Image (tube, rainbow, N blue to C red; front, side, top):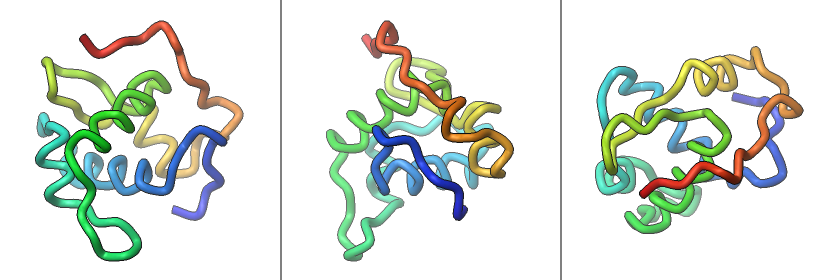
Length: 99
């Protein structure tokens, strides 16, 4: 992608966004995302780590929660990956909870 990322965003978050973008329109859960993405060292992410990171991506509006435990990339997330949104436009909304 090449765009800078917000301070709160971790490298894995980009992997998750890119995976969700490749599967746009599908509802995916943390287990499926963990199974199909890898860290820079080639190891897999675990489901609970992915779930925690998805909460920040959700709070930033980069993904949408479709049903409990199912997510898809949002229009804002696509715009971010395409470089059409600056880092300054991506803030966490701390009031969003995934319960």
